[in-house]
Image (cartoon, rainbow, N blue to C red; front, top):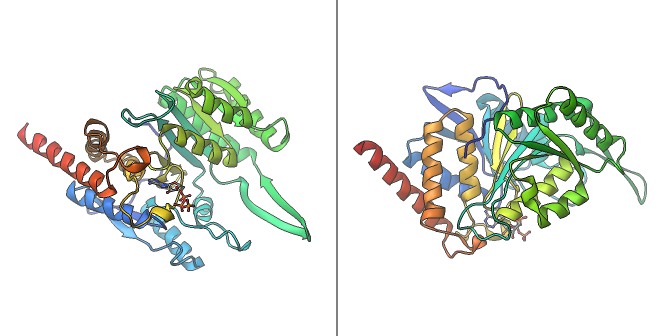
Length: 360
Ligand code: ATP
């Protein structure tokens, strides 16, 4: 699969014909996954150098975050593992969220598609999820006005809603997705979600009459997704921030879980590629059992973004052959293979691709 991203970005830095990509391994399985990606890239002669920054629970300081942001601003693009967030300190803001907010990565895009040979309840799912990634419930404005009374403020702006809705409609046209369904709770959050629905609807009725537009309340959307997900096939779910987070996790679960789907975080200037469900996988770190597919897919998305389609295609074929033709599966998708067996499988397939290319 190869999705067209309808976003005009500034040209990326390229040094001596090679891209430098900021790599934030993060916590849990992140560091081992980045090491596997590095090995694959080296083997495949991918012209990408990793600039690794050690932000994660080992260093959660403000300066580590500042350095990560400066590095992404310089290179324009990053590959990222999830950074653990402390629950117990109200002053401490999630590094993942801060990064997205400060780089204005306003869109999170996932493509949840069933993969042959991976056991799931619903066959043939193909849903794109587009989520506003910087505001709403994630505005981070909370306080306790008097003891026992907490105010948690959800901020939404017409500007951000227009920005995400424009991206979603342009995405639908560029990728021939036939329908956009806006997800909301406007029956209760009348002003906040009401504005979201109003702006999306206005856009559908004025600028994008060729794209079919529907809307659905988030609770019903959750039920519909687990009972009749096929109704969303070929379409896009367009969502504000928190509903987007939850619905994305449901959709990833439907196609095989946290180890499979990648997620793009896009802004006008920068892009950060990570896994769709943004787990750390701390409990399975260092055991050689995690499914590396979502990270490999994130690397493929990144290669398309930096305009290296040949390398992206080779890696896609190698991954496809490993997972689907050879059926090398890790435990999360019902197999017995180790992470390293998938990586070896991908490298083996790349070897064959190179052999064929040299022959012809
Ligand atoms: P805990 O379950 O103790 O919270 P965790 O830190 O691993 O551990 P999450 O990072 O939230 O939890 O991940 C949620 C679940 O998804 C866990 O059961 C984790 O093992 C699983 N998981 C996450 N990433 C992967 C992966 N790449 N491959 C297989 N399973 C994964």
